[in-house]
Amino acid sequence: MTIHELQNAIRNLKQERNICLLAHSYQAREIIEVADYSGDSYALSVAATKATQSTVIMCGVRFMAETVKILSPEKTVYLANGEAGCPMAEQMEPELISAVKQKYPDYTVVAYINTTAELKAISDVCVTSSSAVSIVRKLENPNILFIPDCNLGDYVAKQIPEKNVKLLQGGCPIHACVDMRDVEKAKKKNPNALLLIHPECLPSVVAAADFVGSTSAIMEYAKNSPEREFIIGTEMSIAEHLQYACPDKRFYVLSQKLLCPNMKITTLVDLYHSLSGKGGEEIVLPQDLIRDARKCIDEMIRLG
Image 1 (cartoon, rainbow, N blue to C red):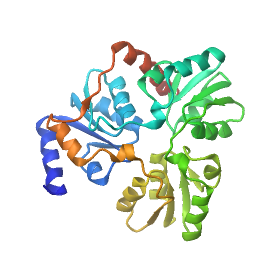
Image 2: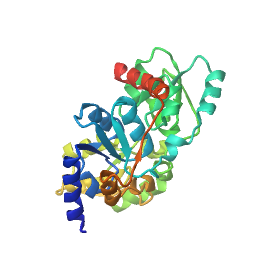
Image 3: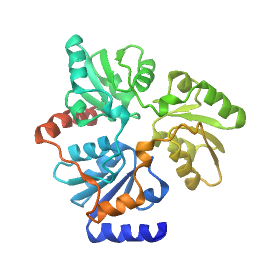
């Protein structure tokens, strides 16, 4: 079966079975093309709450499917490939954060949305990379414990120096692997290109950027900018999607290291099998966990 034939089969199946397909922006182009919604993890979760279908399939990683389930507990949610995890979301155990909370009881725990449901359940407020600065700024408490990404936390702290932001050693191993040598090499090769960087990157890399923002913000900036050339400092699939969206512009990947194997593990065939009822993994969370994890997301919505 060709990619085109497989895509048509997927479109027919999702219509026949009345299933909503979600695809994170880091997914392959052929998956994005058949999705009902594509975007960042929070945007997809919100889209799922508005979808009329009672069954949702997430093409992304586990914490994203969990977030969909937390916001839409009445729906049946599947992860297209059950092996798709996230090292950042899973790197801190709830027991560790509970111990840190006991040591710093006067700190508000701010959890990046890239966390497990268990971590969300013991956090005070959730944030996305695009909302982190504005939400932390609105918090009354000046003492903030930001988990798990110390690079995003550092970026937030620098934007709000009046806050006392405590960080733990954690983050995205993919974004954190690029350094100033990669920046210098890319800028030397493409001297006319603007450098667009995700705040999960190292602080030195973020400081060198012409624009810093979430995945969605990077895409919007590149699409709307009058400039013609861009170095994309986030997962390399974004450069590919931008090439399709703006064929008259040039997009360069900051480094070949910016490839997330957990995002790329999901294939079009995985999605087909999930739709056929022969693959994927249903996300099942205890009701008390859904209730507790939902609190920090509701607080994000309130402050956002």
